[in-house]
View 1 (tube, helix red, strand yellow):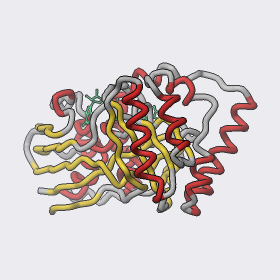
View 2 (cartoon, helix red, strand yellow):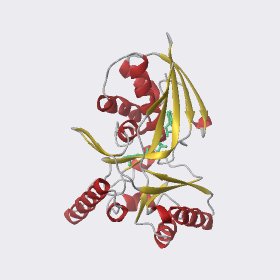
View 3 (tube, protein in one colour):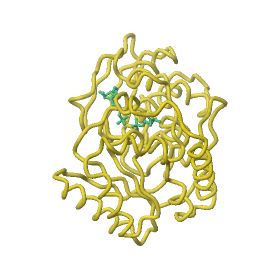
Length: 293
Ligand SMILES: Nc1ncnc2c1ncn2[C@@H]1O[C@H](COP(=O)(O)OP(=O)(O)O)[C@@H](O)[C@H]1O
Ligand SMILES: N[C@@H](CCOP(=O)(O)O)C(=O)O
């Protein structure tokens, strides 16, 4: 039996659509696997009632297939589904690390990234790896068709999750198909600024680079109260605010001393829009960790 804690993640970070990701120190899924002749999946925890246990429909089913590793699998969800916090990816990442160990497949963490990404194709139609990469490797990650680069970064974050669901599949439909050269230049500049900020663990640069003129404005329309939440977070000291993944979670970078106030203001702003929300005071954290073997 192998048990793995797989962290929530925030993809895109504004300027890095389908490329940037960050592992969050909390929340996390816990995935336990045991060898079995046939694969079975049991799901408990947050939002378990919305998650299929059929291996054809659960993200971990695709990982089992790819690793040819049938197992009895238990997923204890700490990351709510349809959150923008890489819920579907956390389970897939945890299963990839756990099954690789259980069956002694000998794959590196980097090699497990595209395998776990197969799970994302099951739910969103695209095997985007920007959530599974940080959930497996930890830190801040840059994922392209060539592979993933990761760096550790110490940046305090708040993710505020409203009590509404946005599916990644739906939120991908509003992504513009083209962008102007001006928007491209702005996006590249912001993305580069953010990457430098991560390498320096500098919340000011990270926050500055979180702005994106192309994808985020369209996604933000799907989140009731977004503009107010963003403004109130900045007023409380956030250095940057954007949609987390495909939403509805909203992520803010800040200094440690401002984190509590930023979280409170974001929750209050959602409440003003008639929506209950919870905030995780978190930071960039480690990747999937074997906690029982
Ligand atoms: N192991 C899993 N964990 C979470 N969601 C899953 C899992 N397997 C399948 N799903 C489905 O994936 C969808 C949530 O994924 P997605 O829309 O990408 O949201 P998130 O941003 O939270 O990952 C839901 O429809 C859920 O039923
Ligand atoms: N790059 C993807 C990331 C989706 O993240 P999720 O946490 O919402 O699943 C996208 O923006 O569609």
